[in-house]
Image (tube, rainbow, N blue to C red):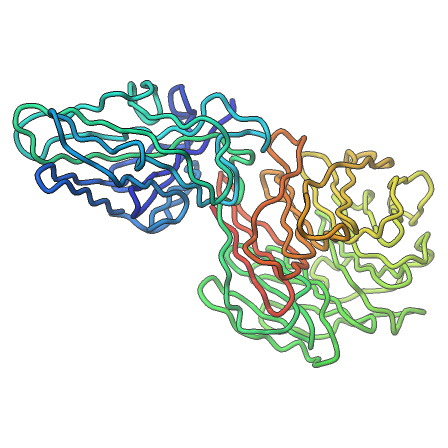
Length: 499
């Protein structure tokens, strides 16, 4: 069953969000909204005014509960100006009843291009209820359906509502009887989205550095970002701080990978064949047999599910250790099957590891040796990033290139349309990529580009990032309907994506 998001729609002041099927009973696994998460609007008929607030403005999340958010003008906004009272009815005129989409996904479409027949619905979670004598009844609505309860009335806005776009106005009317002079109600918004467990908003974060950041990794609520000048910055779940790498400018730390030990352990790589080990507190250079690659830059590090580590970089160099901590045992692997610079390395098992790089080269480790034989990328573009999802490998690179293949056997890759579109230059390069626990792949790159694959796995869509600064890497975490991402870029830029 496909599920759509229910977003709280405030009249100018606030919003909330949850999940439901648009026109059938709510999926019980997703939980249900309670009164503390909806937006309460109070109307004074005699004063011809309406005021709305969000009693619970903070994010609410948990197991089996996708997400419920509150706060002023965050995901959606309902403008309900132009109200008047006449002939026993309080009406928000056709110039006032509008919905603005403040998310980074289009609403009312499952694939980004074809409008969903359900449109964008504003439905009454509760009320309207008179605060004194009399009755209040929604009239002129477009229908009634089960969202969070049976027979909830709604107003429907047809078509696709793009990010930051506003619908045309629609008249809303509440009929009053029995001397009702004030009433209250709560509203929410229901819509299909292309990626229903995906990122809804990106925020700029101050990580305390102006260095170009080229790598990022997460572990639970913690985040590590690395970059120029030997920079390593760490987010402990509440604040950012700088961690000593033991190196300074012009040295660059190029990539980082943290795994879920307790405490967190990890590996970072950088210039001149340097590999760092994180013991949960401090960083130090890992002992390394450089072989012939002592001065080659290492640009990427990855691990298999068995905590076997691989690092790769300039001139086709590949380093390897079977130390699950990544602290010792690093040695150069030769031959690697290519002399091309490599920008991606890692895999799902000890016998299914990929290294990918310039000129579209793909070399594969099947457990005993590296080989390019039988592996075809079908592109000569330089490849810089990769993500996986639901048994598929996606690889991104120069000129907006995205290729894909089933993870196993993964021998022949085919081209996909990246969805980058116009306005950022034909040479747009996708420098970083990763997928969520739900298998949602994302790529980031030149000019602040962010693209993501829709839930159907058929269409790549561009997502507004709010910046034109180049993004170099992205890390994604979350489960049970939760999702958050961290993208890093030039000038110390850090973006936090969340639901």
